[in-house]
Each structure stands twice: as structure tokens, then as C-alpha cells.
Length: 235
Length: 404
View 1 (cartoon, each protein chain N blue to C red):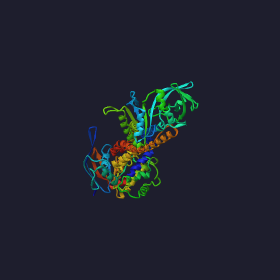
View 2: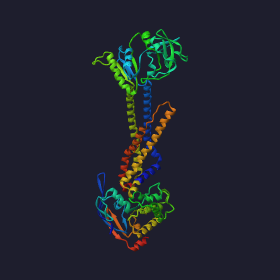
View 3: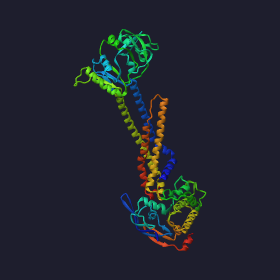
View 4: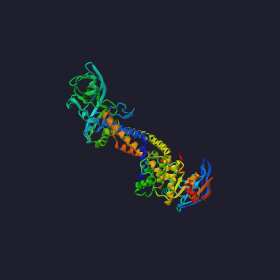
């Protein structure tokens, strides 16, 4: 069954009277457990596609069925709940709350969860331990290195046990060592059955995924499977 | 819901200076309102005390019509119809009247040795001091015998004492008024000014009979002081006095009264009007200062929203609804409002108590104004927080995240 089903998605922005079409008729299906890279030059519409996939924006036209639910026309409250429960975001700029400890940053999504679990702190500690930060629980983002911040972000994306991880240039702000660490973490998440969508402009990073979708001028330019040899080579 | 509150408190706590400055407008507004209301209440009480000090359950019958001129009540014309006989009939025929004192006064020069001073020479009867609450500091009041024989004795007020005698003891001394010698048999305790600001201690009181026969040679008086038997009976007594005087003065229905009745209640009513004006003024000032305070909150909240655009994006991304964001910022402005209100109440109450304790002020704290002020603060906090909060919630999450 398709976890993500986008049919003829269009997105346009109105700016001072001019209408700019960012996505033109994108049709895209992603199965549960897939590891997909979305690749393309800047301005191609990657970010907009991610915003729609992540329910941060809604399509102007078209149908988006996420986990069997048409989310393209949900109201803000329901859409926020989908974001909260089904999607974990990993951002290039980390986007952690400044001045707040790693532990609190990780639990942030549960502040807005409808039925938060009881053992919130334990769960957050577990996840931070999983990304190797058990000794950094009470550090604020300012006191953490870039790689550590990214790991906090990953822990945060997992706190509400989402089906999909949306990663926007996750290695963009990291050195190569931390970049490799991050990609390894994603490989492990795939083994746990998560669906990962990786948005990047870096061909090499994209090779980690089992499928590469290339976007150009708001349309899908190519959609290809990556052979296991290639996947392994990039590791 | 509580989590939004927690977030708001944390955010405010991490910007202590800004939070304080935002609440400063409200703080000053509330504090000044509380102090002003206390001043208003205090001066009202002072005025009421003066009115009560003029004599308990007092009704004043003035000869002629009285009109307000220049903010004060003044007699018009020279009416000669009010007499001692009127006073006697009021005393005898009206049950609600406890005592009466016909009264006449004139500013004249009194002399003692080489010293001379203009003062109010007043003539009245024995009950005058009890009706008008004049107490004796030393000596004694004149007797009914003094009245009958039109004896030349006088009781003197403190201002007149100061002007004529300086530091000397006036008791037993002889002063001259209109070339007639009077012996001082008593001295009044000081009473201060009346509601019109006139010095009530600048007088020399002599028996009315002496006054009418020896000084002015007339039969009418300008005033009769009447003491009603109780506060409840003031209105009833006034009405009966009016009827009696109209009948006594043979006034037909088409003619106006040739006298004016002013009771303690009338005076209180009159002063209340002034106080109410003052209250309205305070409310106006309060409104303006709260508006200014609210605009302070508005500005700070708008800055806060702008500054935390990225935070809003992050919260939205992890599942915050627009409503969550609205709530978070509304709580912030509400808390700022309450904080300003709380500190304002503390400052206002502190100032009021301080001024009462160390200053020469009569201030009365009004719990009503404090309550109203507190609720107004909450209202202002929400009212001026709504716009920034909605603005924050309307931010596009994606754009908010990419804002530097």
C-alpha cells in the first residue's frame, strides 16, 4: 500500500499580483518503508514539495493522500495533528529552540500531541541515548556542536514515533564525518521500518536511498531505482 | 492549555527586562489611578467631616433667596422678614426639631487696648454652640439670664484671639465693639474652615438680644440654625419649617419663599456632585493611561512575534496549531497585563499608605478601584495581545522556518 500518494499536485504562489507556479502536476507514490531521495537544483521546487509532503503547506490543486487520508483539504487543526503524529522533520539548520535543553527540545512535539505518552522523559532520554547524546541531556543548542545538534533534531523527529521522516538537506551544515554518522542513523531507521524522504542537491548523499526522484522546474524529471551496488558503494 | 501557559511564562522569564518594560505603562497607569482615587476619597471624607463638623443634623434657614454665584452660595437682597419669633415658633411647633438658634452677624472692628481687628461680630442664643458644634476651650458660655438682660459678654474664636490678644490670655479681658465694652467670658476651640473655605474661628459671639438691641437696633435676623432630632427627620423637619415660615410670612401660593433652607443633606449632596466630577476625571485619565499601557504591550508583543518567527515555525512544524500559537502569545500578553497590574496595585497601595503615614494627606484606599484596575489590566493584556497573537498564528510555517 502506498503511504504517500500525490496525484497531479500543483502549487502556485501569488506575489504582488504575479502568480508563480512552483509545482506543476506532480504525481508521486511512495510505499511504506521506502527510502527515497528527492534531488534537484535550488529553485526547482524541492522545498515546496517537501512542505506539502510534510503538511506544512497545502497544494493549490491536486490530491494528496497520506496514510489513506486525503490531507490536501484538511483544516489547520487536523493538518497540525497529522504533522504531529505521522511526520518527523530533520532540517538542515537543525531548528532547535534556543536556550532550551536538548531533553526539552526532544519532547517539544509531545507538548502538542493529543495523547502524549506518560513516560515522556524516559522516552526522550532513550532516544538521545540512541543517537549517542546521553551525556548532553541538559545542554542547550548553543552548547552543542553542529553534529550533536543534528542528532538532537533526529531524536526530536522520532519522539512521537512517526511513520515518515522528512529530512531537508540533513548533511548540509555538517562536516563529512558527522554527515556519514547522520546517514548511518537513517540506514538504521529504515531497518526499523520508517519511511525516509531525503531532500538534497547532493548526488552522493542521494545515492543512499533506494530510489532517486529528480525534480526540475517544478516537475519530476526522472524517477529511478538505485542498484544495491551503488547504494553500498556510497556507504 | 497549561503547556501554552508554561511556554509563555518561560518566554517572559527569559526576557525579564523586556517583560518589565512592557508592563511599565500598565504599572504606572494603575498605580496613579489607585492613588488618585484614594486622594479623591480622602478629600471627600474631609469635606464630609467639615459638613458634619458644622453641626449634627443641621438645617440652616437663611433670609432671602440663596443663589450660587462664583461657586459659593450667596444671599440675594436684604430681606427683613426672618425674625426671632419665627425661630421660637419653629422650636415650639415642630416636633422633629431639637433646638434652634437665631443668628445675625456682621463684620466689624473689635478693639482691645491699642490692638484692633476686623472680625465677625455674631449674635445668637444659648443653643448656638451645641447646634453648630462650637466647643469651649476655656471659660463658659453665656447664660439665659445674659440673654434676657442683653448683657455685654462675649465668647471669642481663636483667630480673633490671635488678632487681638496675640499670646495674651483673653479670658476676663474687655474688648470694645462699636464703642461698647464686652467682657470675654469664654474662648472657642478652633474649628477650621467651612465648606466655602471661610474661617469659622474668626468670630466674637455675643447674646443675640445684646446684638439686636445694642449694636444694630433691628428685629430681624439673617439666619436661624435648627437642629433636627435625628438624621432621618432632617427632610421632614425642613418641610415643616418651610410650611410654617410661609404661613408666618403670609406668603400666598404664587410667591416664592423669602428664605432658603439648606440642610446637612443638601450640602452633602452638593459636595458629592463635585466628587463625582472628580471621579469622572480620574476614570478618563485611567482610560488614557491604560490605553498607553496597552499600546506598550502591543509594541512589545509585535517585536516579540517578529523576533521569534523561527520559533513559531519550529512549533508549527512539530504539530502546533494556529490556536496553540495564539494561545501562547495571548498568555504572554495576559501575564504582562497582570504583572503590570499587580505591581501597579502594590505601588499604588504603597504610595497611598506612605502618603497617609508620612505626608499630611488624608487618603482612603478603595478596594473597588483596586479590583476594577486588576480586571482592566487583564482585559488590556488580552485586548492588545490579540493582534500580535493572530499575526503570529498566521505566519506561513515554511516561510517562518526559513526566516533568518
